[in-house]
Image 1: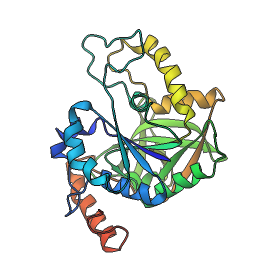
Image 2: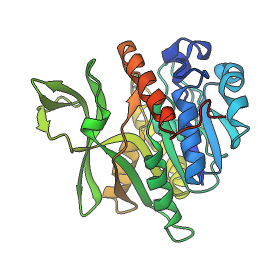
Image 3: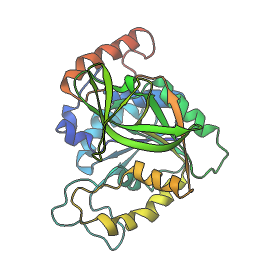
Amino acid sequence: MQLVILAAGMGSRFGGLKQMEKMDEAGNFLLDYSIYDAKRAGFNSVVFIIKKAFYEDFKNSIGKRVEKLIKVDYAFQELDDLPEGFKVPEGREKPWGTAHAIYAARDLIKEDFIIINGDDFYGRETYEVAYKYLAGLPKGSRGKYANVAFNVANTMTENGAVKRGVAFHENGYLTKLVESSIEKKDGKIVCSPLDGSASFEVPPTQLVSMNLFAFNLDLIDHLRNRFPAWLKENINVPKSEFLIPTVVDELVHEDKATLKVLETSSVWFGVTYKEDKPGVVAALKALVDKGEYKKGLY
């Protein structure tokens, strides 16, 4: 099974990969911990989805390290990677979205896979849960997807709001995913949907998506088929994005897929705000001191 890492935006956010935030004394990034956890859970290769302009920096700062641990491939998410008959509209700068990122890796993804964000720490159990789910499916399964969901309290920062998909489910299967800005207000956890609908309060145990999906290989066929149709409708909308949650929602409602909600007790770490870094560094050090990770990883 493959680990697919969405990292095309990392260079932009960090001002170039040479300025990525190192999170331990050995100079590892959060991404290094993700690969380490995925490898020991059973995943046997990784596909990095990056911008071509950052390839040399990325390979020299990350790729050469992880190549010692796992098979590595690179896919490039570029604006001009479009189906035949389409071209980039004048002035378009914003990437085409997470579903397009996976589309960019269409020739490298050869088996069931999971996707993760390149700059999030998901925790060891998260990868074990995802691997166990995919490994337990009959060979050649199609449309048997899953999302590893976290308790919202385990994904918060004290330094401001975070964006999460609030996951509603019945009998273990997703029925609705509400993309929201979430923050603590007066001791309560308040979700403000990004579509502008009314805010609502949730308990600390409310499940939220952190963009960690498990997919069968047939998703690639769906993306190949749906991207041209999406472009016909949206190519001239400047900030439009072809997004994985939207594609999955469509497939579920068309009875072409199901989305199992897999709960994890893992605690998310990430540097949403610069003030988050000291806490993340301390949390990782504590895990190393407890023996959860080897000092230096590699």
